[in-house]
Image (cartoon, rainbow over the protein chains, first blue to last red):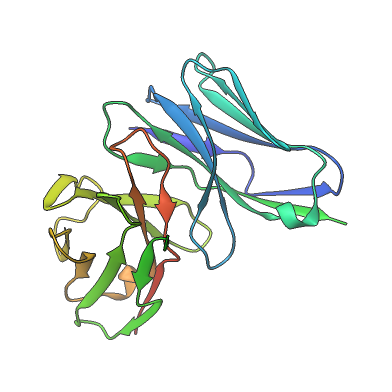
Length: 112
Length: 114
């Protein structure tokens, strides 16, 4: 069955450093991959989408890579700030699939 | 533009009662998705609907759960005869385009079954 794994339940990073989150998947050939941010008690908020034919995408301090051979995406936050503390979810979607499936998330804490 | 609106924000039910969760998608969006989230867990897909049609209900339990998205009005997720294991946060999301588009989420309904 399709499976998405995100690295370590929690990641603790010093402010100013680069945070790197990992998303691995199996038994799936997604047409695209997305990253969302979720704060406690709130719904997820879309951050970035990267398609299967794209290797890397950037948005301000965020960078996403997508390796369909390794079946892995890396999500980077550079110059991290305490306000970046949240849970980050990766999600996969297929061009022919009707649903978007989510990983369990990585809780990121940025300490001052 | 108002975002995705879910109500109620919190819902308390006793075992055996019915729970009705409502979701109004963003203006112009005709695709609605329902997800369930347990504490410290990710989002589990339940059902994907388009106006008046259920497109994919592969994540929906076969019994007690149903969903609809009528031509007029919000999408409804209905849970009959609730049990304690139904306690969770239920999130609704909408999208403009089928499949290949980002999801806009509501703030969720926290269902507590006593």
